[in-house]
Image 1 (spheres, rainbow, N blue to C red):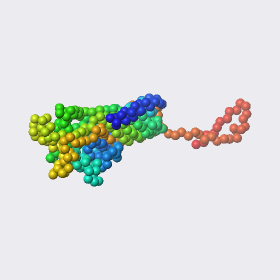
Image 2 (cartoon, one colour):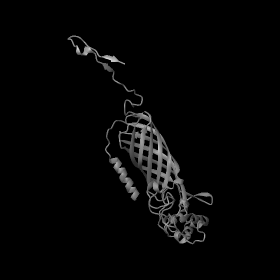
Image 3 (cartoon, rainbow, N blue to C red):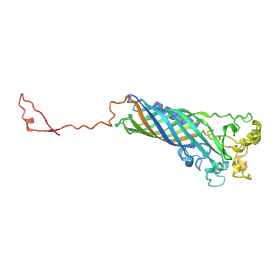
Image 4 (cartoon, rainbow, N blue to C red):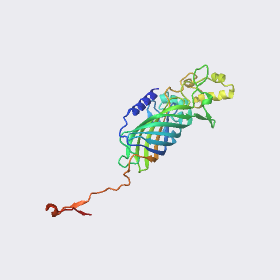
Length: 334
């Protein structure tokens, strides 16, 4: 909830900024391409507690694509609504422990992994830090802050014996078990996107923007890891099919693949902590190109206008020989 509170405060601050220099509206449509990183229980950098991009596992960065509509209501404020398709992943095997029983060693020994596609729809409010007019040459670039609200769909899976298996139906942490009191999680969740960007007018009809966005979710189950390990007997009680119960237990605790003799198996025994309680996040770095569909912000963009220089005036002696009733003219030279 700490991350959610920070994001909510940030969003409130953006909406509290006074709308100034109101001048009309502009509507544009755009596409974006970028990369996504995951911040959750699985994978991550070797050290625990690093914030944002410093805790990303770079090798698991995934492509992202988006389609959006952008509506400017003033030189300072605009709104954007869009759809984003991307994926996230985490793998404990990629962690490199510095020593036995170090904080990262326990994550490596856990030996869990996941992957999931994400489909997100969100609306954000953007506040320019300087005046910006779509299609204008004079007000052609501006850094901006943004925050908003949306929903996303995910579905965590893992590879087991060469097959990709959905994790939620296996209840790997006893979600829905009456004896544990752990609620099942939904695959559709709310999200608060917030970040910073820079936009630039390429011409009177095209804009480019560079954006970093952190997505604060309200769930800790994007990677299907949050609470504690569950015993084999509890899976047997819940599932009527013994094969399903055995599969659920096998994918919930996989340290035996690294430690077949179970020398350190106590660290992943039933009841031991499997994940932390922090909500999961995913970050998107994106470059977007948009095209103006409607623009009543100005009469002229300034991109095609020519600079006009005043005529140089040649002063003659006639200027100083004024006689009543006689008109004098300035001589213009090219």
